[in-house]
Amino acid sequence: MRTVVAKFGGTSLADAEQFRKMRRIVEADPGRRFIVVSAPGKRFDGDEKVTDLLARCVERAAAGESCEPTLVLVHGRFREIMDGLGLEFPLEAEIARLREHLRGEVNPDWVVSRGEYLSARLAAAWLGYTFVDPEWCVCFDADGRLDAAMTRRTMGAALRPLQNAVIAGFYGADMDGRVRTLSRGGSDVTGSLAAAAVGADLYENWTDVSGLLAADPRIVPRAKTVPYVSYRELRTLSYMGASVLHTDAVMPVTGMDIPINIRNTDRPEDAGTTIVRKLPKGETKYPIIGVAGRVGMSVIQVEKVMVSDESGFTAVMLDILKNRRLPFEQCLTGIDTVTLVIRSDLLAPCKDELFEEIQRKLDPDYLGLTERLSMIAVIGEKGTESCDANVRVLQALARAGMPINTINQGAGKLNLLIGVPEEKYEEAVRAIYDTIDGPV
Ligand code: ASP
Image (cartoon, rainbow, N blue to C red; front, side, top):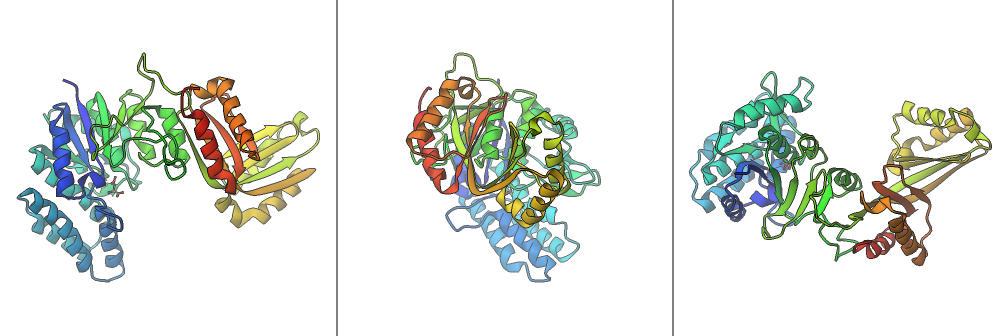
């Protein structure tokens, strides 16, 4: 029998009805032995996540204010789930423990982790599975950084002997036993760590969408779900702003080749998106899997005649950025020119000083700045291999009369990055989507 790790996100466990759906999904496949859970999320627009309520308790305690009104809300969320499912659980004692902790020396991580802890306790009772506290097996170092290698060993030892288990997401503990949390959305990472630890055949990530879309649905409402995406393509998509999965969630399973399947708890019949290292044989795939982008970019252009024949010009340029701890998005070098793409919000505070320094150290013939640009990534390991796809993308942009500021494709060819003015961003995404919406 295959082993599946199934992680359920906050909206998938927001109330008793969602817990019921979760159990139906788990029971539909005996392979779903290890279940990782988030804290209950939003039930409707404007609702609050349990984790946000707990974070507010921390803030109030630090300000010397009463946590009671917020604790009542936290209590209410779990009570509603328990009553809706007819579950017995000593919730009041747990809330009292939380109240007590907030009156003393507060560990903020412990407080915000209680959402996942209680969610996992209830899910374990509801499924009849063993509860596993990540305090015992998700390991952090003294600086609060996740120790993935140690976690894999410890978690493997904790989970392998069990027939099934529910593991709370989002937290673990350091060597001193102090609870530490991952960054927000970190239960995705716990799921991935668990999948690696038990050597799962599949890591399912159950959420509120049916997978990754080939474009932002606010720009392209008819954007299709991408059936398969490679780990590398996913990384590019996440970098460019798609936020279905925590960016760190891929790392633990990459080396082990465990596919991640994004599924929709409200539509379990949908196949979702499967994230793989390599496409399964015989599976056809659109060569370009999607288009994504970011606005708020600036481009610095430096030109100096004959500089291509000198070495070190670009190095000086990058050194200036490094010393200012100013990261850049892209660095394009041409004949006698260097172009840097930088996030405008990071550039703004030091723009004048930076330009003065470039002028002084490099004495360029031309130093220019273009602001309010967007960067569009056309993503696809296969698609961008042939120039056919690129031709079609550029033709589509030409037809739309699109002014193109930069074009960048490295030898890796995973994506083609195109800079267009910010006000043309959505139009450009739509034009590109129309051309990639089908095999190229
Ligand atoms: N509950 C945490 C959050 O809201 C972690 C998670 O859901 O993955 O960020």
